[in-house]
Image (tube, rainbow, N blue to C red; front, side):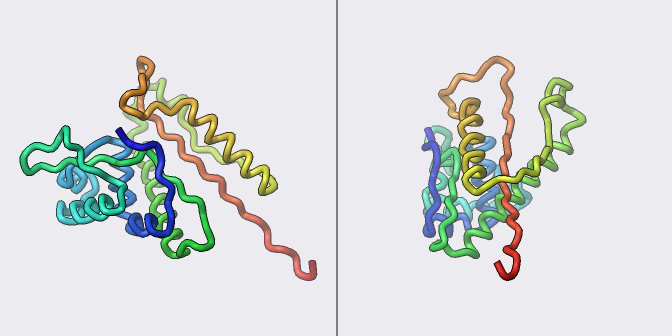
Length: 191
């Protein structure tokens, strides 16, 4: 069983400092345990590359061996946590933080494209709940934080991604992606 969440600090952030590591960890969380070979096929990479990055992820504690699946020389990996949390801290290296966030943003964009590619083959009852929406809002920083907390609390009510959590009949994997992107206007000169 995986821990619920890992909070990134400056050291752990270095473990995710490569976009391929973010993608590997995302696949393990979304699709469950896999071998370096399976991940290489899914990602269009060499087995050597995925194996190398899996070992780095393991060194930082993001992935662990899956002993129930390991057979002979075949090594299976699974995510050690079901989520990652990054509280932006001015003491963290900004290049590492930005690199990690850009890799996550690319993964989110790829997920939307993958859905759009597969949308025509989905049953109609899975088309109706789909949305790509934005809501331009005018909020204070406190209101934005309140919105953030409310969205996370609401989403947690529906979270059933643990192996031992029962799922309702007909439940399928659904991904909720959330971005709260403040764009404050620069202060006027002379104020």
